[in-house]
Length: 111
Length: 114
Image (cartoon, rainbow over all chains, first blue to last red; front, side, top):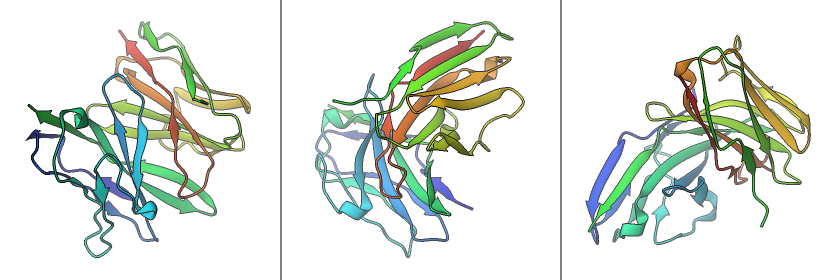
């Protein structure tokens, strides 16, 4: 079964501390994984995708196929990083794709 | 700056009433998704369309929910009759329907069923 698990509903860290938002997935095919972010009163938006291997706003995420994980990391948290973060898996079937989202982790960065 | 739009932004209704939510995807996007967001379940996929054809609506309660795309510029999600447990934020998203493609989300419709 295709599944995305985000074990933490809430993660609180102090400003300047490292952040790691956990994401594990279950998928028999070759996964395409994403992180989406929702800031307060804003719509969900793409933060980064694993195929791009990019760093956005200081965040990085590495796909670990052995551990079936795609954890989101940032070395030094900032207050403006406070938001809801969703990990998502793109699952293909017969040429069509749907996205499976985790339940989300709310990140609070404390001053 | 093209954006997905949704109406209404907020809807308060009484149990048993019909609710219709509308979405205008980004022009040129061929895939449309409907999600429901709740504290407990996070983002649940309700239905999605490609080139206006429904591909998967297994996430929807079939007896009360229906989703349609009458044309390429409009997607609708209807609940009839509504129940208090339907209270949630409903998001529409559109994209290019490819595996690595980004989904662009609308602002959501906050539904409260009393």
